[in-house]
Image (tube, rainbow, N blue to C red; front, side):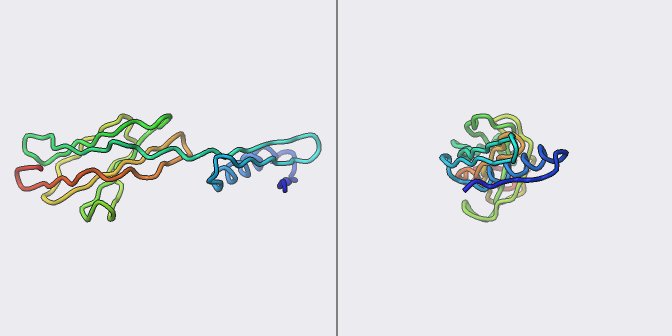
Length: 149
């Protein structure tokens, strides 16, 4: 069944775009296709594509001479515009919060970290509308008063 959209001509392009975006984001199958009937002679179509993969190869290494900063690196995601870095002091599987966003390369270095254990994950943003799942967590990095391991 094809959804039909009937609206005033002055809102047709906005409504069509909105409907196409909703269908695009709600579909998880790369094979799904919808045709959107607009009435009269106008037609439109939205195709769902698979979400981009999460970044891989995430690693965290101690980099400062005082041992209190960590450099996180990862493999680029095709078409990624920016990345988010997530940090946990709880475990490799929970407690992650965004610690940096808008990162444009494939590495990021932390500010000075307090003593404790840290895990890092990375997610990619592709264009303005797609965000990948978070990567697998990095190995734990332990910060003490003067060292990082």
